[in-house]
Image (cartoon, rainbow, N blue to C red):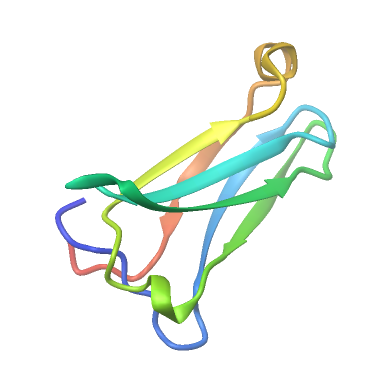
Length: 100
């Protein structure tokens, strides 16, 4: 991204639509500063759907606004076999406020 992520007041979240093969998959979303990879924030959400699309919402805070310009998504973070067998697919784009 060309600019930092800005979370408008009351909208301190990033949502993604995923196709979940099975419930119980931990999906990590990490926002980080591309100039300093030690500066980051992570949130994990667990899927609940089976063979369906669902929206995962990652909550952040107003203090996280204007600090990060990179987003990393890791599906089935704690289980390689689960990630291999039940890969999640992103649909559409990540929603956040940016004048990129």
